Length: 328
Image 1 (cartoon, rainbow, N blue to C red):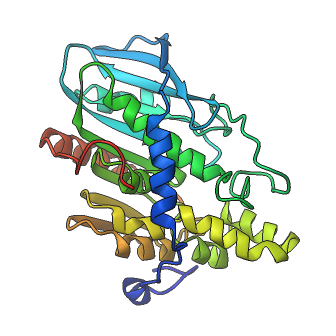
Image 2: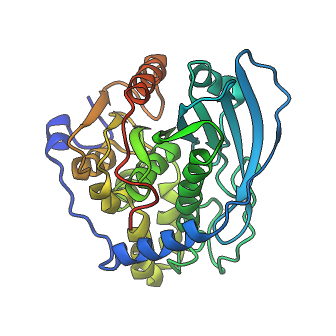
């Protein structure tokens, strides 16, 4: 059982209060209106890999308020309609390779994997975010909620869903999201902010209950915030205000689609209490928290198999999203 956080019984009872700013709804309504009004400007080129029954492409689309966002698309050969999945990657990483995405596409699912701006993929980030941040992305623009890095990443991720929904042959009523760590947090954020998502599978998600993460994480990106506050303690109110707009804890009650979340009870990067706390606030009547009692910030192969089977089952069922567009 967990040795780096609360005991399991305490985790089961943990119910943190959301600490989002009072204008959270207005902030995201305004941001998403702007993000959805901005033209997608999709450009594509063939990806040089031959896979049976699947077409591979490299895409770029306009990032929210600037930059070009890179993505990989695998689409089943044929006219469709077929369901779609948007895949988000972990912190400081890049989108999975086409070979990693192939199992979904080979089963008749269109897959779009997005590179987060400025990280180690091909997406650019040319926005000025002001001065005074640490290496990494957690504190870029943290002094101003309008310039904060994850405001733009969340908006890019919602736009990635719009890109997939508009691709030829894709059924926009059967779209899911998935990802690991940062990708798990983005999956939950997009499930909260986009009205198109009919199912979300989020593995060991980051960006949940960020205050708690900063208090107890022993490794990983939450420590960037702690170091920033050690250097600039006078900015603490600004820091928490900015983070309150993107913490999944505050957005979770907007998630109404079915969702599966995995949590690793020995995770010292995304401590289990952060995941339990955010999961408890998810509004969906159909939600499941799958516990990994002996894992840290990693996943057994069985989880990948379960994810694939569940995504195929959910998307084949023809689930419908609450409405097209994004939730304000």
